[in-house]
Length: 358
Image 1: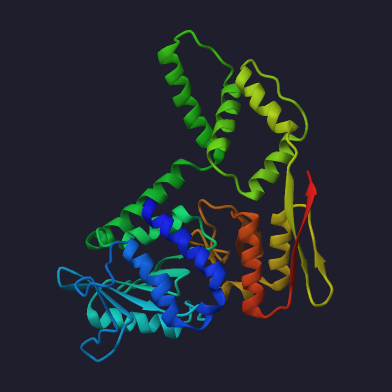
Image 2 (image 1 turned 90 degrees about the horizontal axis):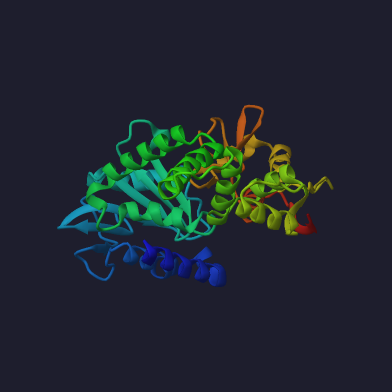
């Protein structure tokens, strides 16, 4: 997995530096972005036993990449340049046709940055896109995990892996319904471990949870929204506990001054949306644009649509009318989403950032 993550980081740097080269040049996308990733996934692009580029099928159709294992076609990969919308029905239908004629269950559509896994024989059209990732905006671990599902070593069990992943996600979401549940579970495990070493150890349950939560926050990066909410709740008051380490952690956090980046959005009609909370600016901007206009753009983060008509069981969402807005992202990702919406809808928005001390 580390090899894939490192390769993705290299690709991201390449895209940032040479993006203009990939906007209309599909060949550059193929050789400099897609093929290095395929190689990292175990598909040896220089070996025709693994990968055959531009190989005609029985009907004379020519998919960009035909991936083989043990002499059998296992996956079709269709490549596009960065200017192409991968959600275009014609493009997806083209991939579906290649896969259907070849009798294979899955296909991949990519422009080197965005990757989409397609399930050929899924009865419900809405479920044919299994997942889609963006190597620039999604977390690198999330992207690597999804891409690894069709690695050479996993391709034979791809369908099983996807079913397991779906079951794990749904089971996890059912178990962990809120951050408090995570804290509760780990707190009890921690207390059990301590008592196995020191049977007479005693601590107030709230102090134990406070300590556990602080340690979890050290391990996992909080989203901007979560940090703001936590800061608002904590304010500047000090928390005294019987547990010295808890007291130190909280005291240091309260004394720490953070400079937070905010978003300002100016519309052509001179309307300015500029709130202290990034999430408020993000949601208010989408509300003014119209979630019904954003929905068809099919913009995703972490595999979840930014605008949806259904509520997600795990990720944080805000409701606007009948629409759910996915806000469980960092400030950087929120800016990227707004810029993508602006570009696709040609809104001529001015999206800026500013900072202030909190």
